[in-house]
Image 1: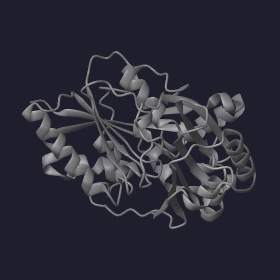
Image 2: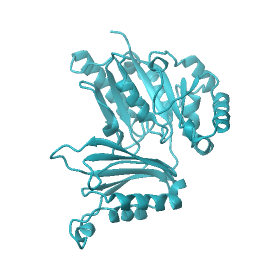
Image 3: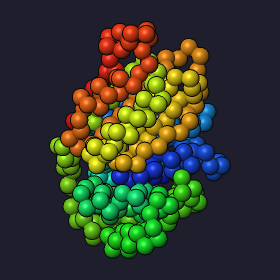
Image 4: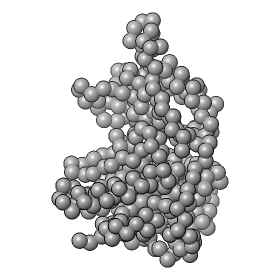
Length: 344
């Protein structure tokens, strides 16, 4: 049996990785894909946003970052997928790993060389990095992980170029070329990019990586900034859409720079479809998701990742945006949305 090709899809928080992954999953390339999803917070959102075809395997890895705290889970999941493929209970030709936006790709790539069973089953095809043109300059200045994602990339895709000037985009591209002269750079708009540039490109070169980072195969330690935490708001009642919009407008003006990433799937009064919320710092947007199925609980979940976030302010403000179940709003005080904090 030939080795199973693996693509590591990385990029900092909010760069557009899930949008690109959906593009790959919906493209008519004739191959079944197994997806391993990693999210920093304890509640997964991206899995609900993926377009899943019948028979495709999507595995979630939450409660930590794939490059450190749940790295052992990656080895276990890859082993289980290989066994299921061998037995015929799962049919796929390739694996795509979407890392959390805070992941250092080096320890993830290392897994395919230092673990004997994995190295005999899988082939690391390429590391594809999505770079957010709007926020990349500040992210590269402030976060080592963003630098590593660019440095280890075999392909760099520049997203959100429509939100910056041509001069800003050119300056960023020049910076990226200085950081990684071997990776081709291409602009990508909402994940639209030729599939041939992403899959089966045999882009990962171990010798080239060892020249950049000689301790690549031996250095396994990685830790995140202790200031970065995540938590999730949950509620069983629908939101008042206007109140929620006003709340986010106010909160972003005050705390937007601290809110590195926030995303959610929410129920809004009067809407039969899920509303998908996406945000990076001051840039926020919503989109219409899939319809709620009859009988399914319409639970809203919003995940926040950031530095020194005002957790209580956010939770109390979101609670006040929910639609009360009686005119006096008594249930609003009784049924508070639950938040579970998850420091990295």
